[in-house]
Image 1 (cartoon, rainbow, N blue to C red):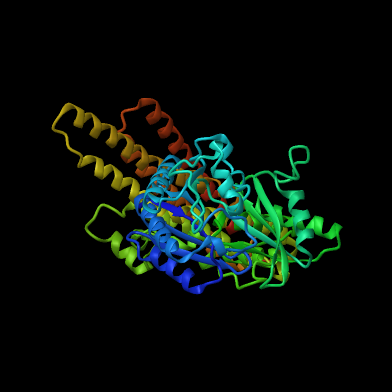
Image 2: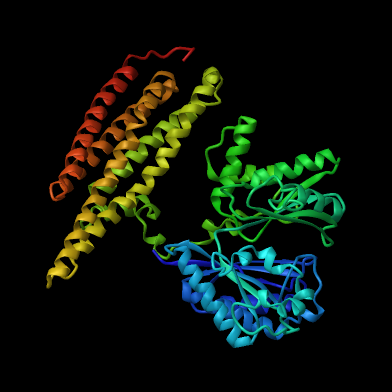
Length: 545
């Protein structure tokens, strides 16, 4: 898979469409860069660009954008609601795929050094790239903003990390760094700017100062007024949505707003958001309101509705959720993306992969899907309405395991291919032979662990399928029977794959434990299949199923 860094440069212009487009063109025309989002703000007079590329490409894309901005933005005349230090106010690099934080720190340093040399402007490092702990937080560097920068540069404590301490009126200064994914999220209020800021002080981690900290960790917030929408906003940055979730910010602002009799009228995502943040919010509201949703699309719709994410503009998930925007160049070649006919034909081709392992995963996934289907064919029907709670409980794990098993169709082939790649490694010298042997052993372990994980996941469904056989829609009797045999076949396939590859693994402890576990899972599959089929055969159709 490709290596991807996300870059999110914030430029101090949100009012001139000509400037917005020129910077966007500079990024999109940079080799290896994919521009994902352009989010301008009139009142903030600021535009947030989001693009991805390999580390070197991301640095070059940001430099190209900065060079265009240098010609078009004059900070001496800039006014806007958002705090800012320069024309390119901040330019963070974020690890997305197959890139570590340290590489993003290197990107920030390379970008900062080259920007200072190219434009002769001061550049600061923040976040994970900060060389001074006082500069780790962006608000600390921005203190005093552009208007106080000239005086700030005269203070040796605030000498830039790159470039000279010279005030450049047209540009100001730029802050660059490395960080994890940040969610820019604003809650809309029918209130004054001052009231919005009061709520911001309540929730942000910094609070009103050291003696009055706010309630939400890893949250920055200010209040401002959005002239173009005629509303106030509590504008927040979620520095770690795993610590403080999207819905937590919304609910806390809403609670404080109610105390002041202020109406909350939706909210807004600026830029992109990770899928997990949306799903976490969906799970919160599903639990809070006792809702039953399975499909990812439905969960996203729920969050858009509950948070009012479409209150200022339509919320298009395909253009707002980063996972939907980024597509690996190899994705189209994945087995699971093939039409059924092509998948079967690829299995029947004169190649070792896809083979029995991928077929076992596909068959098991269909077995889990049938379990989910029977549950859904029972749920919501008047005849079975007394079992709605039971069906809700049973359907969800079937659906979850089904998706896990679908991914394993490709995992099995990928594991086999990694072993085949190891076989082709050079073996002319003792060092090369040792390296090749280690890679082969690692490949074999992967080829064992994938089907073992498949068998473990299928095994978790046996007690659920037994309940479904007792309570599920009797009109789906044959579907339950096929589900049982499909799941059993999945484990049979996994078992034989494990045994085939175990014989060449030299680590005895791993070999012994894995063999024992695989045999146990196979015996459980045989026993459970017989029990479930017997339950189905003995069950009598009645009006009170």
